[in-house]
Image (cartoon, rainbow, N blue to C red):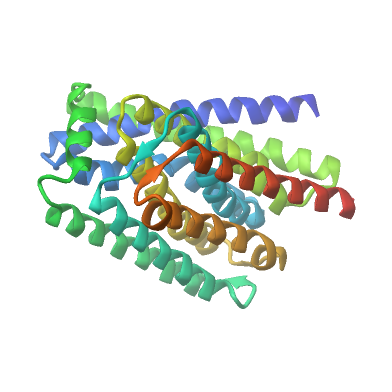
Length: 325
């Protein structure tokens, strides 16, 4: 058991450090190619911050543990909104002013609906996976189009320009090396995390799904937590929200799609009766907070509500796990 816990901890450390190197390398290459800061932030950085979930999901599928991948995808989205955003807003109230972010939220909701329709039969097939991945490519293209059409006064543009200007891009060779090393660390970290998590699950009689929803999901969401807190402290609220919304969209389309392509599988009924509704509920709650209740301003009370929802969901998970063991 001790060895498994060490595997999990080392795996998480490698994922966090590997994700940081991967993001830096990918961003530097994009900047060397002359990509606009807004497109880099919404696509390259957004996809790269979901790299831990994608790698963990892929490794899980290769080890015939697709349930961990599904739990990781849904659990990471729940964690991003409930824990990551909840803590961030509790630290410092934020205001979402970017029209680009609001349109990206709509794209995320479409991804949620698409994935739900494909999962209603209790099975993720390779055809489902292909549909999700085609939707991913289409979403990236749509985001690029949105970015190009964004108003020059959109605050997100200024925030990304400021963020990227603070760090000089690495020369192309160094950026490529960072990208490759980051990828290697992500693969190694994902393998250790999955191996340790599976052993812990088997030792305590906890399902692979619950392990994916808890330990693995929270662990792979740590890069988003660090990025969001850093953005909040720099008064870059739109980047913080954008990272979460973008990451959640990539999680649904890529972290569900790629493992299903590798190893199609049926999943537990709880996914549709407990976990997916929780994820959709938090997503709608976030939308209500942004568009209705405070018109873009998230205050500490709303951060506390998000965090309370996350804690309540974790309580339900562990309560049901104890009852079934």
